[in-house]
Length: 76
Image 1 (cartoon, rainbow, N blue to C red):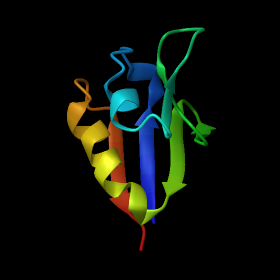
Image 2: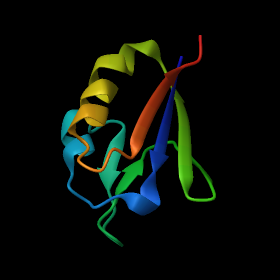
Image 3: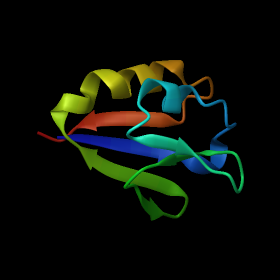
């Protein structure tokens, strides 16, 4: 299992994460920032436990984020 951590308050709305994994990210119409689909908010930091099958796409999201606000950790 992978833990995806998203510091949403620092998002600049560039859409890079959504382009890499549109099933895991979407852009908010309200504020233009990305939303981690299924993420649980804890004081502006969103967490989601994803399957290992998402690893490649999430790594692309992490690499493409210009402000480096997406982190992943292996929870196995």
